[in-house]
Amino acid sequence: MRDVPKRADQYDAQTLELARAGLLHLATVLGDHLDEVMVIGGLVPSLIAPPPPDDPHAEPHLGTRDVDVALALSVLDDDRYHAIAERLRAAGFAPDVNENGNPTFQRWVLDAAANVTVDFLIPTTTDTEPGKVKKLDPTSGAVATRALADAFRTRVPVILSGRTLANETAARTVFVCGPAGFVVLKALALRNRGEAKDAYDLYYVLKYHPDRPAGIAAALARLGAGTLREPDALDDALTFLAEDFATIDHIGAARAGAFLGNTPDPAVAADVVAHVGALLRAMG
Image 1: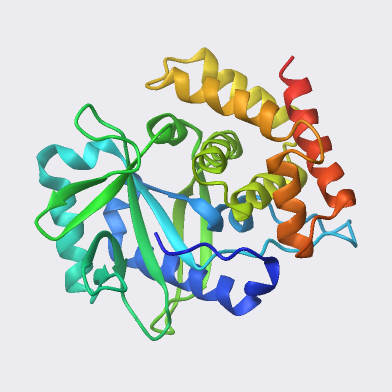
Image 2: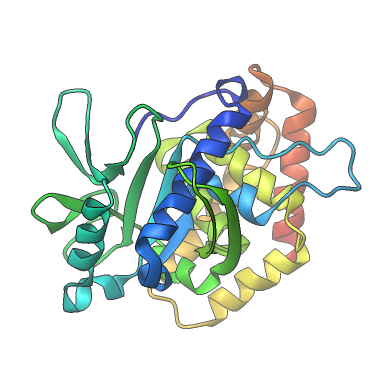
């Protein structure tokens, strides 16, 4: 994936609108394959946790520069990924290239001028380590990601409407990672790469999702009570939450505060600690 901006002032409303337009455009292309994908990453908070209208201090989520889409393992069966890839190519999407001109098999781009890309991820398998790109055909692939298969169990339908990247008006229902799965994925991501944006995204969902904190805790408990494909990933995520958000000086809280204020903000960090702590206490 591309470099993640380090500060809130590197985002603007246009960036979020372009990402939403990119997702809607992708949804119109995937059509009957939408049941096999799930939106994850930095676009999720704006889709599942709008700021409450009765809170005058609530700020909209800052969004993301990229659209991250998880593929179900079922796309590996019956060559369904090849059908998805061919549909993307027919619609004008193409695998992106990095700064050295080499192909990035997991990332697709439709309009380079708009700077909107789609990154594909897929659950880990026995032959793919987390973080590695799994080749799905000769010119494209997806990044293997821990806990993704279990996060699929938390997904929720969201109606997305507006303009596509081609300036068409459309509305589609897309599956989006639910708050429990999102918390797990972001806790693991923060530990793996230490990005301040991951800490901010996690904090935002805990602060503004309608189910906070008891409902998210209950969803995490239900997830843990089920038959998990990667139970250690859930255990690790909860451990990382407790460790990385223990105090305002710990990495999760400190970086979320620095992301929003450009310098560490003790008041924001304390609010981050309070929301993570409330979730963990609600879990018992």
